[in-house]
Amino acid sequence: MQKIIVFLGPSLDREAAEKILSADYRPPAKRGDLLAAVEDGATIIGLIDGVFHQESAVAHREILAALKKGVRVVGSSSMGALRAAEMDTLGMAGIGEIYHMYKSGELESDDEVALVFDPSSGLALSEPLINIRFTLKRAKDTGIIDTAVHDALLASARSVFYPQRTYRTIVLRAGDTVDTGTRKRFLTWVETGQCDQKKEDAVAALEYIRKIAGEKLER
Image 1 (cartoon, rainbow, N blue to C red):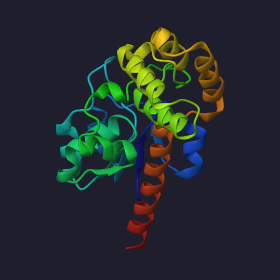
Image 2: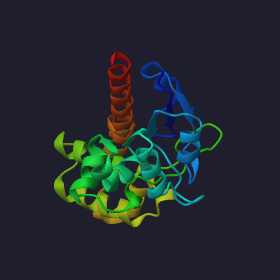
Image 3: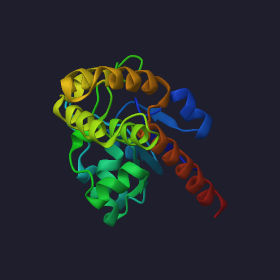
């Protein structure tokens, strides 16, 4: 029988996750948590969210130890995407656009997926840079902003320390490079038009795990 353990936090809320996949959901992974999951009998581990700066991050060696024991390790969205891009040649499976962007070298820094969240509710309190990138692209593609404003807002977002990144903050930080009318139009649009690529990738990972768990059950 499969034992699926998934480390999940702000990328996707628990209620939505449980509708996709029945699993033992645990908070964002810190160092040692994957080894504990293996000891608890996990046959499939989903690594979606993990800590970055609060505590030591998930170590490569513990992922490798899990793989060597025959545990299937799937990474996506956040810390999982980072580690999968580094360890897919050793057997870790990477899922989603963010994983592919790290794998190709289009993304390099942990800062792209970092955010702060409320540890009790799991709700994000800042906006990850990767989501801002996708949102700005959509805004440009749909004519909300032009290329110059896109570039100015992206530069502004990159200049803001990740715990303080919000759409309002990056618009304010951009200053006079973005005119008042465009600022208002963008901030109004972003309330309903923003992208959440981390969420999309987390959903894709859970759907993938559901599929491979079913395949293993059929054998």
